[in-house]
Image (cartoon, rainbow, N blue to C red; front, top):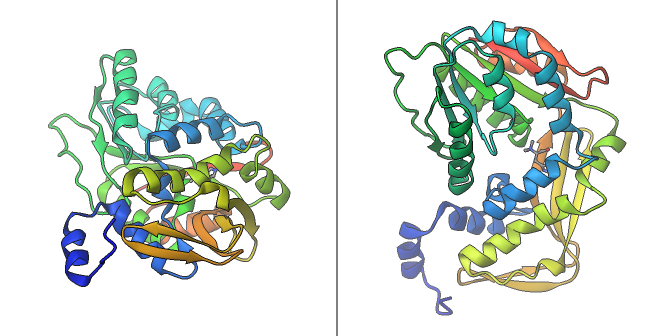
Length: 321
Ligand code: AVJ
């Protein structure tokens, strides 16, 4: 750490600072402080997220998997034969297997994920199970501009797959912008989109405040990551996990709340935290079926069928474009 921090060294640093370093510095300068949720997913964070998906309280993964399983044949009919599947935030490649098993001769699969090592190992396992499928992983941050490999001569229509309600991490404006660029990218095909539905806040509260504290560990992993990658000296024990439903904004918010007044060093800056001061780490928006469809139409998609579970916890939408 450089104690004689000055503008020149800051500019020199800017040229080489990682996205994470730049976004941490910007987020710590904001009030309330915030960190973009995409930084949850380093290797440790991706593993913690997989544990969240298996928690009894975390209904979204299980419910979406059930919908995809029960409706696979119908969904495959809408996607059509010889499609090229582009998955945004592919993670551990669990859900796409249900699609691949139901699809007629899928041509190519392009999983996009920010977590490179995690994606590579998941792709190696998938290739072993689907030797006939061409799999081309794309390590990229799909919230920024990124390039997809060009369509191959025989690749059929492009179909997007965006499960898990990851769309909910975006603000409504960002969600619209993302869907607009997806509509351009997938023209002639469509998007299979999974989003979590508005429901009893008590159920939401349980899902983001699990009894084993896995979600709390996932949240605190941001601080461990800043320490490991940026040489910061956050003491995770100085922060509490907070997750609550913001009803007017229809979203779960996650925060790390400072338990006491203290200071942290980050990249030559001294950050002071008041007791109760928060770092906002995630928004997870919840949707109504009509609200999602209105957003999709604004972005240029058509409206296709929507599939839900009997309790209407989660929804999977087919959006032709
Ligand atoms: C992957 C963004 C859909 O918002 O439910 C799980 C992430 N955060 N528990 C979600 C998450 C806390 C998850 N998404």
